[in-house]
Length: 364
Image (cartoon, rainbow, N blue to C red; front, top):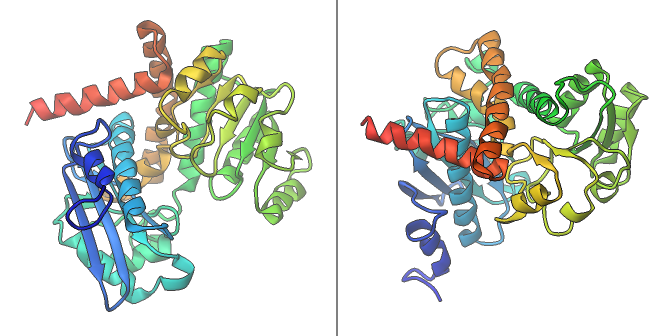
């Protein structure tokens, strides 16, 4: 079944009728001269202007791109609410292979579309876009963060993203074992790219045992050469089965927690930087049933969005790090709420975020 424009009707159903919808605005953008095709989704501005990155990805079709933008924008509303930011949630996706079609002309055209929203949406980096790209977008749009320090920005946000995940791990250790220290804990990290390699440094500094894997073998080799104590395994399938694994940190693609991985996972805690780690609703209950403590991804990986939000007020690293350190307290509060309400931590985090957004709407 399709709509009047031939797009799969399930996209429109998601937008207008499902619990995953409720978005305020969705903008379809096209600039034929540059080849730009993009979707900007604004889920909520209850707490302030929507804030979220721009993903540049070769989607199989336009409907898939719209669906991804809707899901990601909704997730940003919850992430920003739990991070204590005065921002709603939004996300943009640019359709196409960035290695093939990304150009200055395309990025400038995209910047003009973001600017046309008059500040309702503030953009930043995401998969397929980088600091240099945001510098170009910013030439057409002042509502752009994630820029280089030379252009008034904060630069790479992965430093504070990893710091926030580390704080989430400490909170999980405190909740589960009564002590926030990670010394002598064994932590498995899937994906040691921009965020993951910083996380390795935090863990080693505290005396944790670290096991890593990544599809890029040269990246793994670089980690193990710098840190001989780090153990590398062949793939994620091997990592989640490591004996006596205390914490599993998915730091690559989403959907890491699914019907295949959860039953064989040896870790007692899951806390990682990847977005959308739960493959489908119900996985959080499967984790709880196995006695595995899940630190909600959008809570612990919020260090990056805290950083880019601060850019709008004149970036100060120490101020941002202080805010990111509060991820420890926020994560503990979620675990306490989950225990009190008898629900998984992911559901508890959603409830707290929804309460903050609802209270903001009533004050309008």
